[in-house]
Length: 388
Image 1: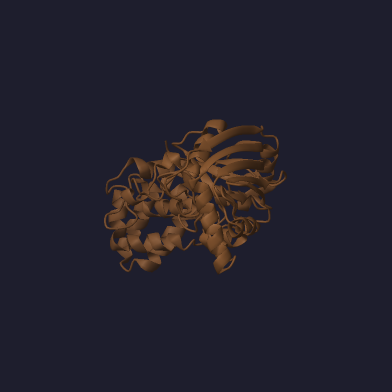
Image 2 (image 1 turned 90 degrees about the vertical axis):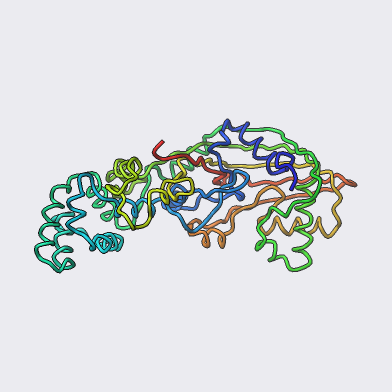
């Protein structure tokens, strides 16, 4: 494999980081420009989707590892503060209690104590053990974990964040303009096409092959580029802790940072029940599902990129590049398709255009890529530790 720093995509990433004043330690750039959708819940999908480790600093769309789900599992699993006596009293039934909480039961008027009392009386066969567990639960009831469980279950599956999509669109429309140039030396050998294989496959056998070949040749060539972003902004939102009006509508609070910090700061069996999953390592370790979250979105609107590539493309490859652009794939990035978004578990529907024009003069190929102004897009995320 060639040196990644001699690669078009690495050169593009490095130029973006420098121009936008971002850190390569936290910035993940999306492989596609991703439309924001039409509702605040579309926007919250991006905050709720935990970034996965990706070679080359890329943000990947996926349909698993939601922050809200991981958080809910943790607060339902861990033993409350000073809850050792209660854990002992519940005994072998603890896993059943955790499973019951995961079913999102309706919280009765008496709150978590009433919920646990009804569950214990029904599911712990020994009345004496059930009463001991209920009495012990009263002692930990006002701790951070039961309060977090009450809040999470009471949200009813609506995991809202503190900013609305109208705020996001307003912020990016007022964001500053950025222009910068970049270049990449020619690689020793073409790399695989950057565009999504399934999107290219829709062109048909021969044209799909031409498109992959053209994209790989451009990526491997000597490239000079110039980019203009009409607007760019960093947009931050946090999970709701208390009921709050967002975008003119009231949403319940569902998150408790104290409960998550409590789970994070103590790894032993006084907090994480032995023999049950997930473990602390599976949650907060190097490969843990809550190791990092998307704390900020990088939003853009009006993207124009000019590339000048020193490579020879056949007439078939040039035509295939045009068809690939119509399918939403260009030599540098693409527009996320509705099918990709749905497969990845996002509600947002892609409808924004991506334009490409090509001129060829001998071995010099000039390519113009454009996402027109008026189409706010997710360009990437800042992935950081929620707990610091």
